[in-house]
Length: 199
Ligand SMILES: [Zn+2]
Image (cartoon, rainbow, N blue to C red; front, side, top):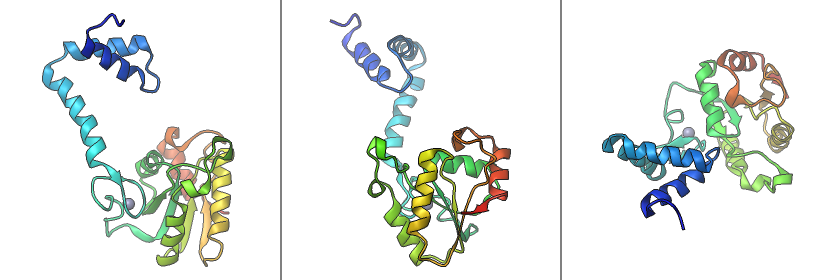
């Protein structure tokens, strides 16, 4: 039997399923939500609802988007001859924050990780190959994370793309091996982009 009333205990249960939130923190958050103004608590519920009903993957690059095409894909000022391949939408955000890149992106939605059962067919690799076949790209920049799995993924991709007469590069190793794009600061990312090397 839970010590809280039904609705409260349900909220605590839900919150404690979130990553990094233990039972104690979940209780603290639940009581916090009971104390703040009703409209503030409901705004949080609303934001969760909106992110799940309005946000989807861009039909071209698999970035998060509220429309068929994301802001980047629908921006005519972007350089449509360069394509930067990243693992996750949050990696794309890190590269965008650096302000050093004007091309397009392709989000894999993961990386090849045989030990975790993640195989190439579970990523957006087929869509990437189709895009490269149909597009006018002169350069594909591999910006997977500098980890064993990230490197393996970019190697696999460069083999898949080797039939096309396109330069394949990767980010310079300013980002220490093992660290992830998401946590690198924007100067490091800008340097990594400027100093990119042939793969
Ligand atoms: Zn897009």
